[in-house]
Length: 426
Image (cartoon, rainbow, N blue to C red; front, side, top):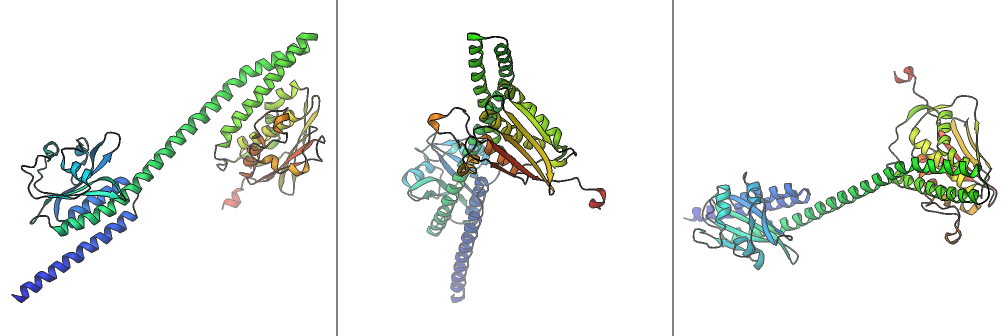
């Protein structure tokens, strides 16, 4: 008799130890998983195993509908169960949710709150049930149920164990829901940003052609007329130039949001690249009767560069020079090799830069002019974009100026990179 009692006591201790170990394992698993679906599967499987039940399920509260829904269930019927809403009133799970108290039912045959539709829908007959609330701090987020005890009936120990499981589960589910909501919010913001960028890029592209026609006809009208008509043409041109500046800023806004670090280098002849960049800005220079002069090295300079990004940087520097230089001035675009470096520069005779602002001008939205006396417009993004595009290729962009009214020179230094020879690859 004593041996039998000792064996029973040992079995009880062993069972308790096994449960504690399962709870420790559950805690570790929940702390290492942030995916909500994976968490739910771990929780219901542990609840079913640790209480030796046929099944387990998790119902979560839907704030929009004001009802519970089956978020997970053991077996293959979770998706079917999810189709069945569970009301807060007149249901077992709803009662647990509302009262924040566990419920143990050894027989469900005559239980009026039992949702027989759910059982019929998935072909599972529920005979007994132990349910506990999923609570985090003072808030109940759902219900955890264990169904059909395989041997005997649900005990007080079973209830306490399931409450511990639910306590760990509630925190893990809440954190996973927060992560899920954060990811969704990020995706929504990303989509909105993408739509905005696409709109800015499309609008900038579509407006360039009609604006170019306006500038061309206004320039022709100004040259072939005099008096009041010529004055009107000047006003049209000035407005068109302001619009062109706005388009450049729109284009820069889209480039500002691109990944400047994604470099796609190709072997290019830099004299050709710079000449094409100058063509993009020549129309604006002609309106102000400015001349872009090339000061290129006679030797051909070829290097591995991202042509699109380098060209965009040069266009921004030239646009800056045209905008801040008086009419009929010369703008110099230079290129040469110097100590295994590519040196490129844009020199103007414009308003110049105070020496204490030579670094600040590259800050986003920075303007040399005071806001209340601005004459040149723009958002102050062109130089920021140009610097980012150059630095992404391992280069450097800086400004030099003797001060206000003394003009400016913007210099680019890039490493001279050549294609590896076949022998280098062996």
